[in-house]
Image (cartoon, rainbow, N blue to C red; front, side):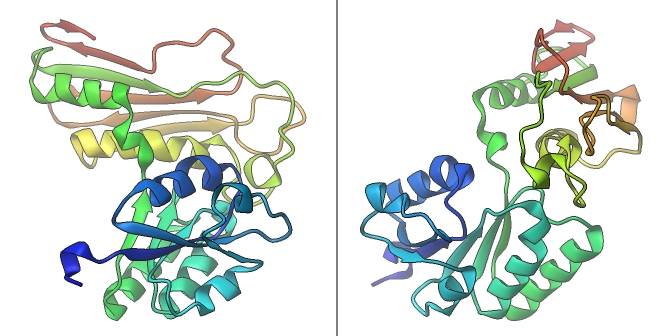
Length: 252
């Protein structure tokens, strides 16, 4: 079989919301990939929809499968570094969900490890393909607003009660909306404009009884007095537009 027609045997590290909605359906539907195995520690939910895949009870079992070439790390961010490193050391290519790692040092170490071993390591940024972001990208690329001067990106929610997810709202490192939602928005700004000259950040906990950041506002400063404001609050009951753009010829 030629390289162009080769099927990539793929394993998924978790079958929670991410596995069910963002990973397994797309791997299974793509003709270039085979959904070879899924990790479920105790349940058998994946059997109903993907009975043709293998079921493993641990990531260690998944990594021991010599047939699997690509591993998708879609577990909580606190596990990304360890599982990605294990997968690379096992000789697997890796797709890891955002946020990539907790620290820059961890990210740099994994990037070097993948390069040294000749393996692909990719961070999964699915919101680059959202319809609204693609529309914004087109408006900017075609300069429909003239010289862009200001852009706002919002990812707001209204949730006054805890979700019960410790890795997102507890005291663990990287818990909170800045890592969870901010990773999408910062990535979009970097995709559109590159690295900023400077930035201001206000990150806080505004709901009583919560342990992780649930509010943030970033102001990114670019050349030609362009400012990009990135904002999220978990106490926004009336939602604002996800994107607001102002330029010398108008607004979008």
